[in-house]
Length: 264
Image 1 (cartoon, one colour):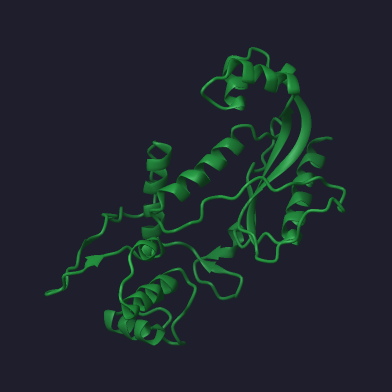
Image 2 (tube, helix red, strand yellow):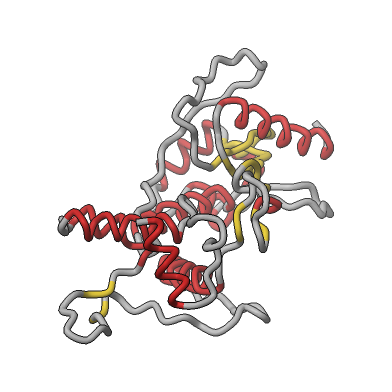
């Protein structure tokens, strides 16, 4: 298999994933697998880190423990009617595991699980020397072309706001224990304090970040009308529901209240 065939295989893997029911996904190609001798040696040494870290850092000539076996990892949400693999395409494929469900912007377990998966997969991804192709490619509802400034088609999504991206960057920094450099034009930081006091006079409630509503409602059972209001706010912010025409992008607080009233 040459470089062209290696990347053609990635495209074919994406086509199979889409046909099986993946709604949006990333494809990461791997050129090698570990030999049985390598696995046995790794188990004998029993280090506190993964086998690919051991191969790179502790083994002088890792080539003796790996062999050429191109394969492709798919990471992404599936649909409810996803078809099982049957090998009819001539490919061999299998489901490895599920990720923690996403319960909000500050769902640490979800972020850690997602980060861990990509960190491991990328630890031994590969591409031919001198290649200018991206090693991770996105398809379906997660393709780069799907996210635009103003969504005018049903298959498009508006790009996350600076505030959302700022929150995500901080969450990733905490999970990865690194500091992500701000790119020019990212905008000012947005405060992401935990639940705070309600700023409205004579209000004894607390502020819940809209991205944490799902996780909050799993733990707290507010009155039905409060629950419905919180769900409406969450779904509007996530783009699951939209106000009537003319109220989609309110420019004033009064218009925003009118739009929210129409939703709830």
